[in-house]
Amino acid sequence: MESFISRIGGKRALRERILAEFPAEIGRYIEVFGGAGWVLFARDKHAPMEVFNDIDGELVNLYRCMQHHPDELARQLTYLLNSREQFFDAKAQLEGRGLTDIQRAARYYILVKESFGADLRTFSCKARSIPHGLESFPAISKRLEQVVVENRDFAALIGTYDRPDALIYCDPPYHGTERYYSHLFSEEDHRALADVLHRAKGKVLLSYNDDAFVRELYQGWAIIPVERANNLAAKAGQSKPYRELIIKNY
Image (tube, rainbow, N blue to C red; front, side, top):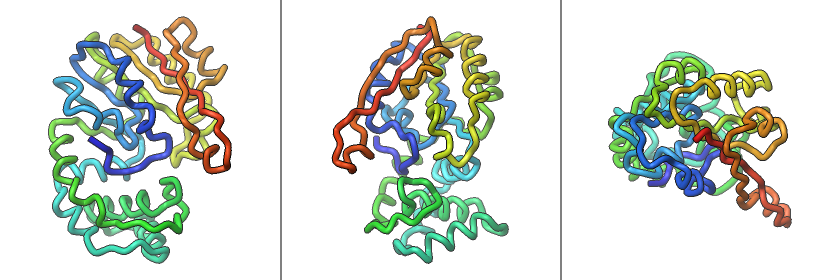
């Protein structure tokens, strides 16, 4: 199954390689930095218990509305156009008050769909159809039916759900690229995450950029270099691949 949204740092290109490193048996699957959920949606079910988390409250509200109110969410989006005015109206309305959760989810969806690179800030100036894709909402809702959707700090989330039979999958903001994300993630946050994960009871799997700082944080773990096409470089007429790491403690 495909994700219903785009997201900065989404794992569409790398998810099959990530899935290849999953352990054979998982009691509970915990996706700490959920984002677009490409890894979550890759299978009908990863484990008897699944937890999807993200620190972005608007994103989590969209997931919860998709989970419980897909038909009304689709209705709110059915007759909308791809326009600069609509984009900035939606952005302004989200910054205000008085909207229902479903109305907020619809406006956030507009920002995701109509922004450049899903940055939520700049209008993309590209031909897009908001109603295109709404037919997938019932299937997405069905997939999320039994998923626990959380909006918590990574340390609190892992502390709550970590068990010996858990797989904790983390796709944090890549080191050195944090400015592209809507929520601050500092170098101290990278260190704090590593500290929490080194003490985890369950199995831990991370996707990160290939960076000396990251390699040092997870020294002694299995570190697997991988490459994927660099879309930004390709647009600039270059073919240099983007180097990433899959890191695990098992």
